[in-house]
Amino acid sequence: MQYFSAYYLVVASLLERQASIIPPLFLRLLLAWEFGEAGYAKLTGSNWFQHIAFPFPFNVLPPEINWQIATWFELAGAMALVLGLATRFFSAALMVLTLVAIATVHWPGEWQTLAELLTGYRIIDEQSDGLGNYKLPVIFLVMFLPLLFSGAGKLSFDHWLYNRLIRKI
Image 1: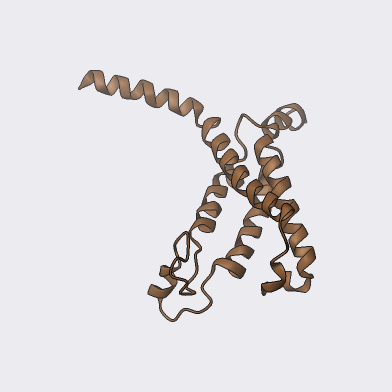
Image 2: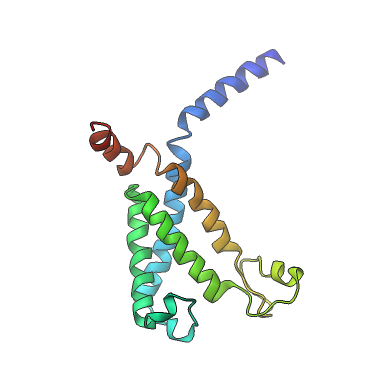
């Protein structure tokens, strides 16, 4: 048992030393893939935003402008996440974009009970029952939280810039 305890402490220590490098990097890369893929699909696809009712203040803008904003924030945000550049800004921006997507596309059209609302916590609305499919966007929101609060991690341009510019002040 004592050997197991020592082994566990060594492994825990090794993992702890990598905590500010590996987890934020993998979060950034996974989110960059997802948002880059969505941005690329918008860039090469046709605008379906004209069929959506956006919440205020996004409903003030024409659908074409909303389409362009979403496309370029997803593409630029994906690239910035890969590089770890302006990670907190792009995390916040992509979180807002995700909240708008939940409100406009993924949230149930109508729901009467909490049980109906919770039915929408799924990846795909396979039954086409109109109760939503907001699970994946909620997961993305939670994945952005460590990047928003803790930053991009040590393997990033943000960390490099901080050490080169800010620390010298």
